[in-house]
Length: 403
Image (cartoon, rainbow, N blue to C red; front, side, top):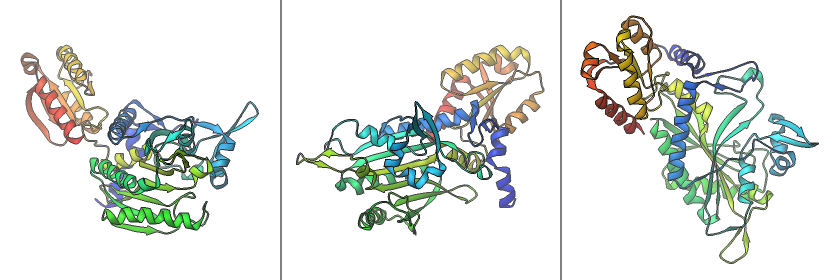
């Protein structure tokens, strides 16, 4: 099959509709609606994100969706970005709906006096942002107007910059390896429109380059593609068709802490300016989901599958036992459904395969009598008969091995 045909078969919008993952509506163009199956996947991605970030020493925060306009003027987003922002006026005060999460994280940092002993402070946020995209450029979950950035903002001392960026690179690698993605790395340097002095930019670019070199990472220079407030390292993941998607980013920022008078008390009892590291790994949860849908062609590994097993009773007389099996599997934390329809077993199996459900558990007289299940795996066929407990253990082992 040609790559183009294969890409069409894997189109996330088509699969999103067929597998009932998400939908778009005229009432909110470019702002996706997540259906129950899509929420299962999304929640698994967010659970993994929380688990890995907690282990890596991050603290989770949540900041408001709408903040006063003057905040965005202070941050520099207004000058560089206001054409892509949405606005509101409340109590004769102008507000902007956030296109980025950084000012909120900075306000939390500034909400109390900080000591050098607290640094690095790592704030992580699954923050919903809105950006105005032209209607012609909207594309499923890949190009949207509302999305959730898996952001983190690290407030660090100058002597911690390289070790913290090193840790971020390790975390990025851990995430992408988890999904089996290979990836390419780019260093994006000072753009034409930038804040701050050339000297500070030179220092920031050197720090990023130094970490990449010391880790032996292969990277390309992408001249002039840095953010307006600092240079960045971008990560491009390669999917199963070899297509490249820009997802993660690490940005080094000397500007924002200065603009917002961020400070910590140093060992010398004087106030010092922290350095801010902005970073995202999924990039956006929505876009990462789109990439995963196309990468796996909707055939998700067991831990990510919205429905992990379909229980198929052969006739009505097996329905009560099927319900008992469902309760036991759900009690073990598994996601299962029962196909109670009075249809032929062959049709039920074909439809479960079409829905890309990893396992089918068939129940007939013999299975009911022995309190067992006839297992079928998608694309592999019959796996034989197992007890309910053996089935649960098999599923949990498979899930844990990919977590």
